[in-house]
Length: 242
Length: 242
DNA sequence: TGTACATCAGTGAACGCGCGTTCACTGATGTAC
DNA sequence: TGTACATCAGTGAACGCGCGTTCACTGATGTAC
Image 1 (cartoon, each protein chain N blue to C red):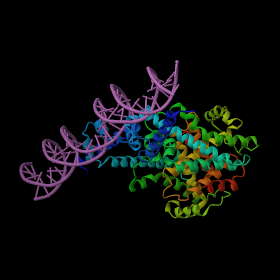
Image 2: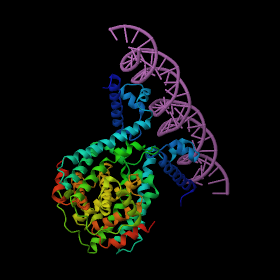
Image 3: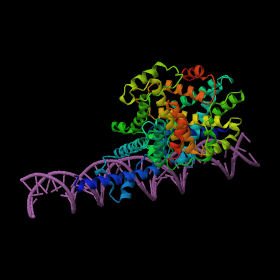
Image 4: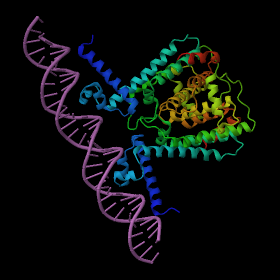
């Protein structure tokens, strides 16, 4: 049972992070410790009782963002019946996108351009992988349920084939054939690309029907990664969610 | 004929921009005018003879980056015979990606997370559209040459259909049917997404065969936008180029 | 070709500001007996 | 239950630093006659 000090400490850490999150909107990854302290009505030096440096606070925010997106992906996907693979895939992406649109500055922190001079420490790797884990799980289950690998596999160059062999050894991707794994990775990169294009403003004055545009892409991606039944299941799963 | 003053002036503007470009690597979009002046051995106030403010210099860099990428796309595409649509498409993307990998910080400036507090002025719009113009030109030509629209068009929601109608009125997209236009926009967003994933480090420890991975995606995208003959033409066009 | 004036580049000092971080210190909370 | 000590949160001053921008001024280049 945590004593008073420990509980207060946890609360203040949360308050500092909340103020820092609010700052992201104005300054991006350029956190201003003094401004955070000012907002909380404390001396700027007091921050150092909770975070060893500005970079440490930034790291905490990054991990928090990864975890929040990961949790959203997990919850969204978990709400769909296990045997509805297209629905799970669509729900996972819808949850990722919804979270991203609701927290654009946190999204920019983790999926935007790298912060110059900042090197992410090792403990960001786990949280960063959570959405991938969800997507991989859907593919694994679909393969286990006897899904057919997409037709007409293209020849894969040696170096890429080696990557796929190496990645395929991870338990996360157990049982997924290389061609499908490659498609899964492609869909992963491209769908996040679609989210970034939206959030970073590249669709301004081009596409205003953002939800429909994204939903359509997810539907196509679902078929692309070999999951059947996408056409009539995925679109509602994505668009009606918001 | 420009006199001495004008020539020197143009040279110094170029030097300031070059120093600023070098700075992007260390500081991102957070340009440091004094550091630039220091590097050039001039007083910091002298910069103001050439740029009215820090934001003005940033805008100049952004326009320059857009133009450089646009020019690369145009030149890359122009080197391919006009009737080799798959080759033109692949060459355009290869040029865009090559430029981006060669100038990652300039790429981040224009395709990364938006700079908080910075609003791009109107004169960035033209240069920003150059790669789109090249890609659209290929599609237009392909349609003109009797290319078949991709099979099994999915139903398009009303709001998205309205976007496509509006965009389709632009001369840039003249003659491209809505379904193909939608695919073209999707491929545009997703392929840039693939480039960003690479450059922003999200493929680290995942894919090391970056060229092959990208080339494969372009090949598939070529077919996706209805351009035939991609399978054996596009890949060499992309990979052998580097 | 030479002269008188206008234009411009560049300087250096200054303004006003704010940052991240350290440090010695105070007072409150927690712990062990 | 009370006491003695250890631990910790928070303060406020200070350090060292650098920033963007302005301004009056100097000296060089360009222009018009």
